[in-house]
Image (cartoon, rainbow, N blue to C red; front, side):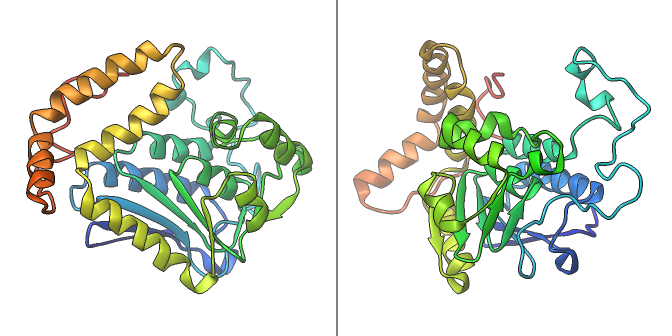
Length: 287
């Protein structure tokens, strides 16, 4: 598809998803929501993509929802009275469904590791979007804010599921209830970002990490690891993880696992052949 608000660029197994509305600090729109969700689903089934790096054009990562549009700025249909029962099928709820959540659920479903390179302001959906990504790097210039209470709305982007799993309940509530903008150092000390980088080194560091994954790991293993970590950690009992892990080891051990063991014994780099598009084990997706 053609993209108007983002760029989709693949090189050497690394997809760069560039939020590309620099004149508006990459403010989020319904069009950007649709394009990002489509891009993550596309990348998930694209064997040319091993790892995804997400960053923003210009000085911002994403300054939140574009609040300059007319009518309901979140694109919601105020003439409806939706119920929780109706949300059992959120795809059938246009004008009600949270546009940020569409993106974070697409990230959650993705088979490819996702690295956020937070180059500047990441506010509102700009902050909640990164919570669904796997590794978060922040420029020293980054400023992050879960500002929902200050503009009178509730958190979105599935952030009330992701954020407490990343930083714990107390830190999540502090950031959400205060609604303040905090810097990269506070984001790092609070556990939201893995590393703070010099602004000029941010993307280089993200690509360095992406290349490490792309060059040294099996695509099927990466896809399984990503989904197993998120889904098993939310299961009610560890035996649920044991069931999935047993099947995952069983099937991978007879495919890429043989090559991985041989490469280890022969002291060479493994040449993994299985594809995350065509060769996922038969129990996937188990949920």
